Each structure stands twice: as C-alpha cells, then as structure tokens.
Picture (cartoon, rainbow, N blue to C red):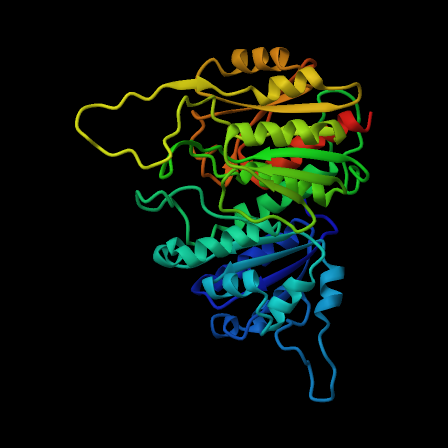
Length: 412
C-alpha cells in the first residue's frame, strides 16, 4: 500500500494520457497523495480540470502560475515527493530527460527530484525500438530510473510488449512493491535493519554483465547478459548509503557518477579487478555472467574462412566466486548468483557450499520473461538457514529484496 506516500505524477503528450485518470484513482485508493505535473503537449490530450478534480490539487504545468511573478518551484516538488512517476512518457520526454533539456516544468521537476523516478513509456514499437530511444532508456536506467513496461504482447522482435504504456493496475502494483521492499525486511533469519541509509559507511563490490573472451580481433565467446541486474544492485546499494565499486563487463549501460565503475572485457580482467578490490570491501555481490572458458589461443589477425571446419580449443577460466570465497576474511559477506536450467535448487546449494558464499541468488531460464535481456526477474534466495522464494518483479524491485538480505547480515 502507498499510505501517506507523496507521488508526483508526470503526464506527457501521448494518446495514453487518458489512462492517467484511472491511475490517479488507483494511487489515491492505495493511500497516496498525488500532484500532477503535465507538459503543454499533455494538455492537448487531457484537461487539467479533469486531473485537478481527481487529485483535489491544482495541476502544475507552467513555470509561472500568474503574471505577478508567482512561480511553481520544481525544487520544492523534488523535496516534497516520495516518488516521481511519469506515465505516459513519450519518446520526446525520454530524450529530454536523458540529456537534461529543461524546457518545461516536468523536466525541471525531474532534474530536481530527490526521490526515486519511475517511467512508463508510451509510443509505437518502431519509435521504441529505434537505437536513439534505446540509448536514452539505457542512460536513464544508469541514472537510477525504474522503467515499468509490459512483459508480453508485441511481435516476435525481441521487444515483446514494449512501447505501449503498461496498465495502471500494474504500475501501482510496482510502486507498492517498491515501497514495501526497501522498508520491510524479508530476511531468512533475524530482524536486520533494512531501510534507507542502512548501508551507510559500508563498502560493497558488485560484478555485472557478461565477459567477452576473444577468438580474434572481431570475434569472441560471450553470453546474453545485459548487466541490468548488476547495475540495479549497484544503484540500490548506493541509494541506501553504501560506497559502491562496480566491476562491469562490456554492456551498454550507464550508472550514477557516485558509483566507482571499473570496466573490463574478459574473465581474467574481471578476476584481477575483483581480487584487487575485494580485500577493501565489507561485501561483494557476484552478479556477472562470467565465461567459464576462453580460447587457448587468440589470433592477432582476423581468421579467414579457408574451407572445412575450424576447431576451437578452450581452457578453463578462473572461478572468481571460489577464489574470493577462499580469501574471504571474518566479517566479509559474499553473495553469489546461480543461473540454472535444471536441478536448480540442488545445483545452487552445491555452489553455496563449494564457494563459501553467505547466500546465493537463484534464477532459472525456465521462468519466462526473466534473466537475460529482460527488465524483470524471479529469484529464490538460498542460505544455510533456508530458502526464500520471491514473485516475478522488476529488476529494481528484485535488487531491493537482495539488498534487504545483505543488510540483514551486515547489520546483525
């Protein structure tokens, strides 16, 4: 529930703006106080009078409310809110947000916002799939924005369900889950201290994304990891006060400037960076999808096709989790990830013991719409005290669940 939460609802110039009426009703029904900020184009689709009648508040649209110099303070709105929700959010507004084009009240409010920002995109599939839109989404994700998008329903393009605005019921559900997760611990044992600022003074290292193991200058062995889960964990730890070191494989994501980011490409580079950083950390979360093998030889020039088959010899990469587990000192916490396709629980338990982990996050490729490339995930957390299953959620909400567990250990 959103009892007592203050929500700034941004509305942009999309045909989906009509859904804002139901969205406001549901937010208020859940206990939230709603302040609408609408763009000039948004007023072409829905009137401020309608929105004001639903929220019982004047709608904010222009910088100045009257000609006598009275103005709306976007800074005050940024301090007032517990969350900002932009729904619907057009491609134009995404671009302005990503590049700081503060030419309307909504963008200035976003740039002043101290609270979490949620975005529900609304555009046709071609606009959504365009590389410029995708770059803007990646940029805003790196800035800590949470995207709420449909998980199914669109063409066989790899962008299933994307583009259209998600239904108001699910948007409100995502907000409710978000506010429940960071403030309500769900530990396996003990009460813990999971709340905003609970990681203040803690140093946490996170690995994220894939590794690329070179075959020659133009080819590599890799996997489908996007890095979204690891980056969400980094942003969640930073939001809760930690000093974060993010060791990132080759991904197209940005992160907050407050996060110390180390970019690597291969497993060996990630191994070296992790081994160097880990002794100075209170905890490490190993979320990266690291390649288990690398080519024995790497060609300095492009390998030409000269007929017949090519045999590629592979050698094992070092096990980063196991190496850190062997070097873990008293008081350090080590969290691993297990992506499995079969015998999930059994395999995860073996990794927990073998690699000296404090707990392991299990996800499965058998859960549709999760894991690689997805904005959602569905996990189980396994420790020596038991197993806890979670529903399918956005990766930002999943990150909060995982960090609650970590906080419970660090604060005990």
